[in-house]
Amino acid sequence: EASDVWWKSAVVYQVYPRSFQDSNGDGIGDVRGILQRVDYLAELGVDVVWLSPIYRSPQDDNGYDISDYQDIDPTFGTLEDVDELIEALHERGIKLVMDLVVNHTSDEHPWFAESRSSVDNPKRDWYWWRPAREGMEPGTPGAEPTNWGSVFSGPAWEYDETTGEYYLHLFSRKQPDLNWENPEVRQAVYAMMRWWLDRRIDGFRMDVINLISKHVRPDGSLPDVPAEDGLYGSAFAATVNGPRLHEFLQEIHREVYEGRRDGLLLVGETPGATVEDGKLLTDPARHELDMVFTFEHVSLDHGPAGRFDVVPLDLRDLKATLGRWQTGLEQAGWNALYWNNHDQPRVVSRYGDDGAYRRESAMMLAIVLHLHRGTPYVYQGEELGMTNAYFTSLDEYRDIESLRFAASERQRGQLNDEELLSWLAAGSRDNARTPMQWDATPQAGFTTGQPWIDVNPHHDTINAAAEVADPDSVFHLYRRLIALRHEDPVVQRGDFHLLLPDDPHIYAFTRTWGDEQLLVLGNFSGTEQTVPVGPDWDQAALVIGNYPASPATGGGQIVLRAWEGLVLRRA
Ligand code: ISL
Ligand code: CA
Image: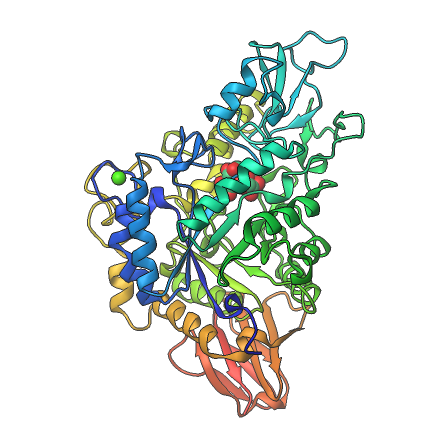
């Protein structure tokens, strides 16, 4: 097993730079701010930092709209600051993975400026340009080339008067989709990736990478999708898993990765990917990606109207879903494990209880996730048990998706103001984007100025200073879980076997490696639960847990307290 890859025993920490640490008082986090906190990351013990985009950008989607891939936005700092960050992290044995957003650019990228300028510009074909639907008046509703809807509400096509044609944008109109069918586009992206690797970064997190190959017909036309309500339908059906996806990924591997040092990481963000897709994307023999983020387990509490329509989680669905990914990628491929990122509501507010049992449930969720087979990702603040934002008025929101959803709902008039605010409070991406809570001072130690988004008032009790000082905190539980992943071959490689699939409250599984076995239990309820685990575990030793004393064990049963989570090792 000595030849096994390093990331099987690694843990990744995601920094959302805008909300991590401000160093100059303008209220926006920046690279020099991250530099002030590298020792904190080293104390937590993570192996890799993944940085959300800091490239030059008009910030329409907080940096996921890039106008220059090879420069840093002045909001965040300079290339020299980034070189310093790479150095500071490497000195501490931490790798740096950068976000790679190449499904689209900003509309302010020079490539797009050229492309839009005329139909015969050499870069015209770098993006998706199409005339209006036949017989329709260009620029009128329904005249779009296809009925694809944008992820951020409204149509995915923008009419551009310069040439009287439409361009495709799966996200905002300031995020035009690149045309990966064009080999020049691909070569430009690969050159940029090599430039960053030469700067000694350690890999990429590839934004919506399974959308780069559109389902284009042989005649160059694009198919309509089933309309959801009104004129447009989700464009995902026509963009996820396109016919050339695997070919493009293998080309990236060849052109960018081959012949470079070991120790690089390629992780793909793949909304809509199934286990079968995940297997193809991450089987090392296929030379595509090292691991992908599934969305299945973070969509289980979405009602018919999507992410803002939050319904209660049925734990059986969560176990079945994660369990399928575990067994599906057992022989080939690898899982990325996560509850949170900058797009997801906080897990303790979502699948836990952020009231009376906030600490317990945050820790239980951590134990359950980190004991799966795969590479765990920790999103900033998760290790403190940070909660949702609980904004109560629209003007507290900053996220383009939330604001566009609110605008389009107001137009449709189906939700009243109170309902709209409660939908946003449950589902908004801003839940993850409130500033990192460093201490109990007025702006949580995040900034000396006015933060770009409100600090959660809970920072008086939930903050890094308090967590680091308390050996029984959520932070130290995360630190121990990370250390356990580094040390324990059962955690790294052991087979996964789900137990009690039909139990509505208990998450239970074993991990087995040779003669060694671990039992992982999580109580997803606020009441005591008696769990029939069998006599094998009567004498087992507690490896890690979220209550100070061991649970009541014996006679083949374990009694779990409210939101208790634990790991036992068989004697
Ligand atoms: O959060 C979502 C919308 O409900 C997701 O569908 C999200 O848009 C999708 O996961 C893609 O996310 C990534 O690309 C987006 C960017 O806004 C997200 O922040 C990024 O993680 C466009 O670049
Ligand atoms: Ca700043």
